[in-house]
Amino acid sequence: MEIALPYNWTPRDYQLELWKKLEGGCKRAAAVWHRRAGKDDVCLHWIATASQRRVGNYWTMLPLQSQARRAIWQAVNPHTGRRRIDEAFPQEMRTNTRDNDMSITFENGSQWQVLGSDSYNSHVGAAPIGIVWSEWALSDPRSWAYLRPILLENGGWALFNFTPRGSNHAKRTFESWRSDPNWYCERLTAEDTSVFTAEQLKAERREYIGLHGADEGEALFMQEYHCSFESPVMGSYYGHEITAAEKEGRIGSVPHDPSVGVETWWDLGIGDATAIFIVQRIPGGEVHVIDYIEEQGKALPFYVDLLNERKTELGYSYTQHVLPHDAKARELQTGKTREEALKALGISATIIPQHNVDDGIHAVRMLLPRCWFDAIKCERGIDCLRSYRKAEDDRKSDGVHKFYQIRPLHDFASHAADAFRYGAMARSQVSGNRARGPIEYPSMQQMGMI
Image (cartoon, rainbow, N blue to C red):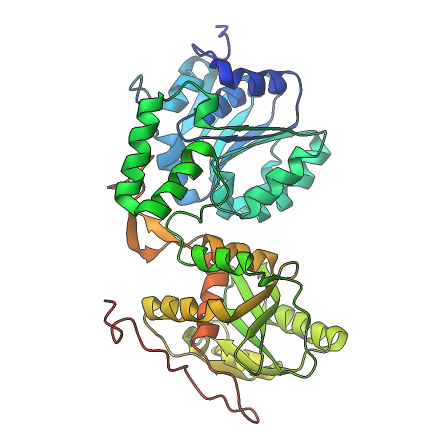
């Protein structure tokens, strides 16, 4: 049975230009569209169309694997009451639909799957030829760096859609892509489309201000409906502090000072990433964040080698290595702790006792106004601190207005944020190899904040 694609769907007038570019063979596109402009609808119908033109594997990639099911696989079109994937991919074109891994196989042999940017390196054997990054501003930017060569080699395409989430990697990449003739980039605000009336937008602005206060409410309204990159990530713990650092010129060139010792602040991972901030505490109170390391799936000797290379090539003189409390946990395979393993590699660690995460976040907020960041070497770490945020409360959020839980979201930003938190909870050494122990910041409870 022949089916006309896109199936029972026509692009809206403001969506038509992007659709024409894709149909014309555009291999790289980015759509920065306001909330409720139909970004995912366009992308799903394009995948359905592209999958019948060239047999291969196609992906839709959400920021997190855990949210992919709710946001795409189970999402219902409120205007029709039907699942969006059923509207884009009619049953007649399918041979198999697998709910457990959220994939559909089509009669011509193509396959489509919903994934998370946090699991991008777990599926590369599939060699996708078309990928949609949905909500790119909240996605792990390493996913594009990792998958780009695959698409380049096989002539595949990439389509990014998002609403801004502060001045993070999405802003930088979008500005870079706009100047590249191989990319089609489009930014549509609510004034560029017919989705909302002027009265509806006024009501939305009032509601945002009522929920979040005048300044933050206005900033969030401009972000969601006018695609402004200036507002911090919604629910961000450190967005305002990082924005202040930018405005005050504390993110730029921060060279290593050979006269001052160097600390490393670690978050340890194996399957997850290991993150290391490299920091100098300058006499007088400034904290210079001069370097950052993050890798996935590497053993401890890999990181020790990187630190030794910096010591030899850049002259870093290490005075303290700050690790979390779980560095003292014994691994079943070796019977050793990672503290012991690092010591055998020449790293004597300062272990931060287990602490209340809220107190650690409070310590970071007190520390950040004294921090200067090297913009180039610490780019990834800065993005992570900016993006570290509260987990969204799905029971209360309605897709436009966001409500949050009291716990942090575990995503690509967590490892760097945890490493920085451990550093904020530590004191620098004063002599020899002995550290002075946990820093004496008052807790939030002591300050009467909780």
